[in-house]
Image (cartoon, rainbow, N blue to C red; front, side):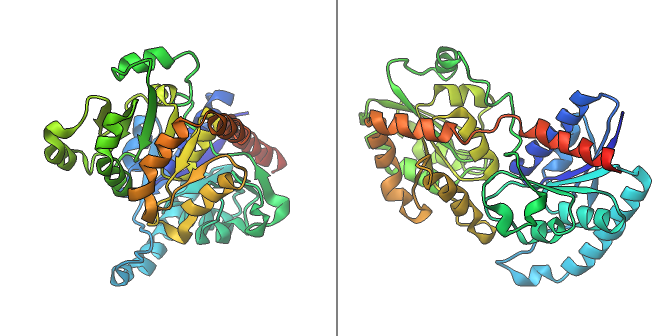
Length: 367
């Protein structure tokens, strides 16, 4: 039976890619299924979703600006406008189910879907639920979560532990180690540190690498350093000839599967989507949570792993002094590498996209 599903997820890759993964799973179940995305105008999803082959409609909505509060003056008006447009979209598309994966547009879409009697699914990626998801989750039919203990935020009978949908092409690393090392022009006899700063980059991670360039040059290691598009030009001009041959700096990683396959130790921020990929990859990880996120949810994400001895945490404020030394020390500690790898692998959930898609079908069958 073909169904119609409306999906909202965007703002960052951590929201867009899981949303697209769910859509792909629904299409795999039945190519006749109709999928419509709803995003926020001007945000990343308005380009990424069409590139993935799906139609998207934009809402004129923004998040709360916590640094410059005066910029929130038009937020109530934008919310009302977005709710009205969401109503029109739902009435025109007539979805069987609405799915919210996070991002600015998810709130208005799910609020209106709940009001119009359309069954809703909330996909909460983080270990600490945001204000909007808690609000729409109260009336949702199902809440799919990635961490244990989420009953503190949502009605327990609605919570289902699925994990976060991940990019399958990124975690397909089996048998690719040597191929990956050749791709990055790395030495097969040296250990490799992978530094993930995200598509835009992470200032703290970049500063931490720069502070220890000499140590990394002298150590018997090599580095794949994803510095981000926002910082790459400045770093290239500053470092010029200072960048050692054993450090490969790039703005983007076009082949995440190769980066993961080549890595022996991974340094990363603690976004929910990235952590979900890292759990499936099963390699030792040092997490540096971003302090610039709502409710400090990246620290809470990281601590969920640290409590299970599945990751090492370095505070953002300590990273410039501690991060690279900890990574170099970890590479020399075989027992810690084994323990971290085994423990993080236990947390990996590969089929979250399929499981969430199956829950969507169950809701349709209940109608």
